[in-house]
Image (cartoon, rainbow, N blue to C red; front, side, top):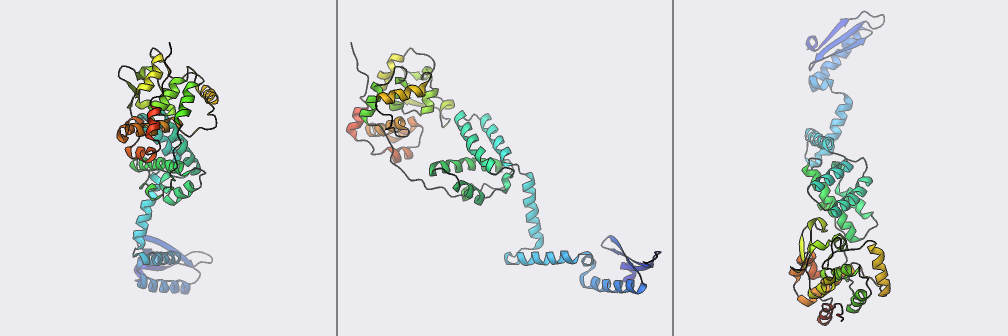
Length: 369
């Protein structure tokens, strides 16, 4: 075996007189010695090692053998081999290499949704929320982010449960997009717990408050107040509304998909009292809301003594509550408000007495002359 694997040869050097040449597992090696005895001793030891471990084992360093043994011990409880672990990790590294930075995926998602026709409000919201996330994980590739990472970040936000859950929803959109693009293997968001939302009482205007508001409104703001109170459009939807979308003949207000929060077109019935408020504007053209709207609305509220008493989404919530109490049709109301029947029933049921609802839908301008 020594003749095939190891050969001791003289070597012309003033100190190192002998060389041991070996050829094992396709690799050539040489080691130098001062005496022939030292060279032969080395060969003898290597031959024993070769017999015990095979040719490949001779070339496997002691450090590598220790590491392999340690790895095998770590994997033993899981009944996995070192090779299986290496293959798994190589797959992980390949995925990470093919992944992209969070900020890049956010930009790509935003561009894709814009091409898909998403509303401006949705795109702005997407950019705002996901921009905060990408800044928090700057430099990280999206495949490296875990459910634990996301949970810790969400819990660290100084926001309420609703806002936190909305952020969670946007992140699910981001990770689902990344998975479809091949940037991440899984979407971790299903493993991220939702915050518990405490259902609070919906704030609405009383019949007297609504009446005072309309009586003190300026000519330019009456369409805003009346459409909000008696058609339930969202603030942004009214601000984008054009008089061409108010169809007096059909008795409908069209909320175009491009102007709706949900990016879905819907039609809202013009109730008789709303029609009475809007008829004087029948020949108007252009935007429904005047320039300087916010300042004018505040002046109206001051005159109506409603500057402080102002529930969140007051007009829309009032519309939903009084409509459900008067017409008792959650499905029809859901279509007009652009919500689900379950949400309508959960938030607006039993908030208004029938007698008050009847008075509300009779609020109309006084006819003079």
